[in-house]
Image (tube, rainbow, N blue to C red; front, side, top):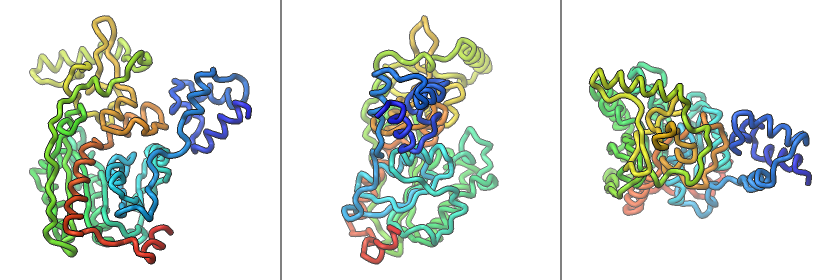
Amino acid sequence: MENKIYIKEKREKLGLTQKEFADALGLGKHGDRTLRRWENGETSPSSIEFKYIQEFPEDPPFPNPPFEKSKFLIADLFAGIGGIRLPFQELGGYTVFTSEWDKFAQKTYRSNYGELPFGDITQIHEEDIPDHNILIAGFPCQPFSQAGLKKGFEDMRGTLFFDIARIIAAKRPDAFLLENVKQLRGHDKGRTLQKIQETLYELDYTVHIEVLRAGDFGVPQNRERIYIVGFNNRIHSNVPFKFPTPTKEPTLVGSILEKGEINEKYTISNKLYEGHLRRKEMHKQKGNGFGFSLFNENSPYTNTISARYYKDGSEILIDQGPNKNPRKLTPRECARLQGFPENFVIPVSDTQAYRQFGNSVAVPVIRAISKEMISAMNEINFLTDLKSSEQRELTLL
């Protein structure tokens, strides 16, 4: 088969546009033009480039396990790129429903799990969602974060929690895991979290809440998030669940950094660096600690990566020595910083990848919580059997 035909057929099989495939292959700013020329036969990729295209994974690396071998059913809401799903799937979870409205995150989800999520959860009726054992959701955090306007439930995005509540009320899963920013705990003097708790209590669930730090679970990132775990009191009112004990294993930023030469596009420009230095000095004179943050391979951890990282990388810049400007993390390094597996596919541009990993979760923390949840539920035979022949037909429709 001619190279041009092979490249086009592979791209179409992946469901990617020329720009998306070019971004995924790391072809640079005008990579879509290069790919278009390859597909039109105007030019040809080098042998190394063609080999990379051939090796780009066609099959999703993290599909659902065989239904017959699965142990429980999952609904994945506000799924992002599936960071919460991964650990539960490792424990035998089968995802029966996924919702994520962002089209770029949907691309990444499809490339890794083989499923295209449903869109806006506010437009999906709760009765259209299959029964499931565990509901997982990293619901939008902007209304509660320090970076946002802190309007909470006054902000429409803040009310998306109530979409979770209506689904829990209708489907009554055995358990749920919700994730949000640490600032949710103190937002509006604690009244926002109190309202969330009250809503879940009224739905007859026992609720456990804890703030955990990613750096305490093996990834070099000072990322603190609040986790809300609930169990259905109508099944059992005393599930022996406890949040995981932090492992406190030592971490180093060097463990997530790429080896060898890094593409120059990640080195920040003189103009951007001068702006960072100027703003840092202004903050210093005012007596506060704001400004860009520099790290190297020997740093124990980085700051929290955020969805705005694509703008200027100010929260995490990597020192490249006295004779070179610092650089931003690569998307693969961001994936590692959040604890994603090495074979996690990144089929989007750097900008979208930064947003996606900044919005995602620290996978090792979720892994630790999920193990405790499933262990506690298995201890008292808590999981509802939703895999009868009748339910199986309903679930797999």
